[in-house]
Image 1 (tube, one colour):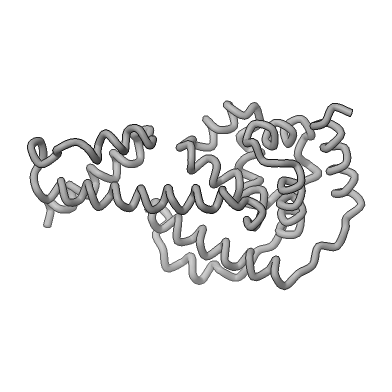
Image 2 (cartoon, one colour; image 1 turned 60 degrees about the vertical axis):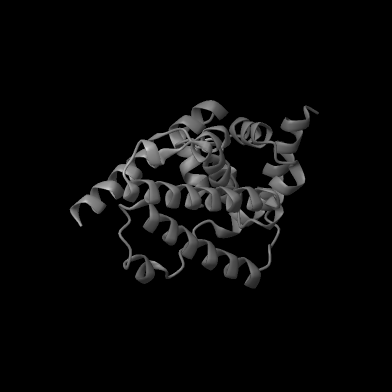
Length: 205
């Protein structure tokens, strides 16, 4: 039992620390680990690899239809997941404050509070088209401050575990989706002015 726990801990550390990519995954899948590791570890490894492939496929599928996402923050979170960046690294590469990424992903900042130059960078460097980005930003505007009663559900999970964190995020996404289906966007003069300025900034007019 102890050996199995050690294997789980080892594989968890591997999958958390290594910069996974399609190329690295392909090399592992074509290798012959049976000659270099015990059978239990081999089985665990391929199980983890299978989970990784399924999760990656889920992320890619969602990003292929960004207009169906709940918010701009969800889009950013999926982009980070796809490329394997932590918040700090992603923010540095995009050229925005780390706090901007965190606030966007949590929908806990008014969109109009984000500097235009940072939002411009996020849109341009992630490659999302302006129309879809603005639609998601309107969703983010609607979701700002929305705190659904999912804390009881969250209490059942250990948020220190990455697998449990994903469950919590899934619960949150479901609540957000239900909320967006129920509510209608009511044009906000502040937000629309912000988006108009942002479009001007992006197009350089």
